[in-house]
Length: 224
Ligand code: DX5
Ligand code: ZN
Image (cartoon, rainbow, N blue to C red; front, side):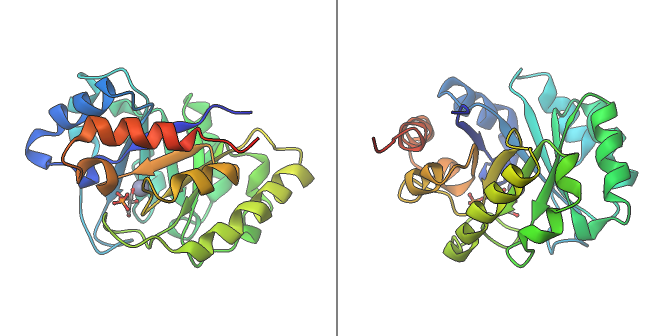
């Protein structure tokens, strides 16, 4: 079994003290830091870009997972890689030549992922699955933290697992993003998800360290 990884999203944190927000989850055992990049075009919100990420890179050695919710991500991926990110996901409908972009990201030593909106079917991955490192299944519509989890997206997990098996790509990691909390993380983990993004369930908690600890414990609970 692959290792389960928790990736707190700083989108739900206090932007006046992002360094501290990262440190607190790192000390609590976070595995990855999820960075939500929004351009006000692909999604109706604007967040952070390479200069902020470059500053944050100095304060932690945890892997940075950049979730690009921007149009024409090919124009900016090098800036994000230069800023120190380790994983980049983008949305298929935000770019024309997804395969070229995936190959470019990987050629720079960074993991490449494809993000699926709730309305995007797994079948859109049929050709690109051969080339990617991970799939990010959005369980809310991208744009904001604190939204309600959409349970129907879980139907995609067995379909994705079948596609991975049919194509010999069982090494592809599955990430889920949006509305993940202590009440749904165990069920989702048991379905075979590897990476769990958690925004408001970590940064909205009165005790962030305890929230990380509980999520990690619950994502590793298995029925024997
Ligand atoms: C939404 C972002 C998510 C978000 C998750 O567009 O991609 O990463 O920050 O926040 P929660 O966990 O609060 O849904
Ligand atoms: Zn995200």
